[in-house]
Length: 154
Ligand code: IDP
Ligand code: MG
Image (tube, rainbow, N blue to C red; front, side):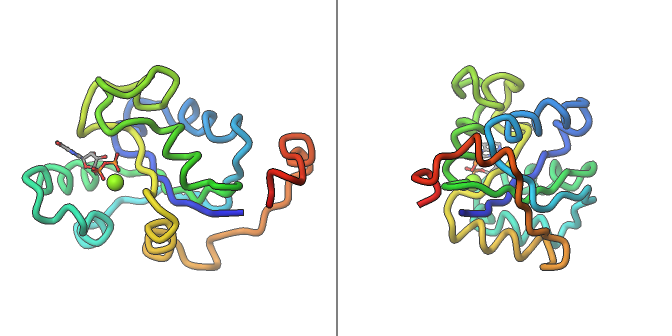
């Protein structure tokens, strides 16, 4: 089992797409083990996107993610990091495959609805940055007995 970090960006929340975006993860068979609305501070945005500090789009990215609340989520499942990245799709909505969240809902390379950690190491760092341990729950779902074969769980 792996836990990854996603957040629904201000565009997804403002466009009223929380339900439709969360449904993608839920119906796939992943479990939410943490969820909260956050008005992102400049400091949190800078720490979260530190790897992009030198990019020309960084100031615009900070302005965007701090512009309106986001929905922060911890998502659990086998290979959750890679599975979530696949569900989310390529960075630019114009290039993202149909069937992905960005491919189905977006046309922008900036306002692209949802963030997902890009590696297990990033997931660990980002989960610590956004959630306290007390905000994450232990989740055992009986439906998992039907979604997964024991061999899927390693
Ligand atoms: P990712 O979200 O697909 O991992 P990254 O390259 O890590 O993409 O970029 C982080 C975020 O920065 C993107 O999701 C997007 O919101 C924004 N971004 C990335 N590239 C550009 C760009 O060329 N112009 C404007 N915004 C960008
Ligand atoms: Mg990234």
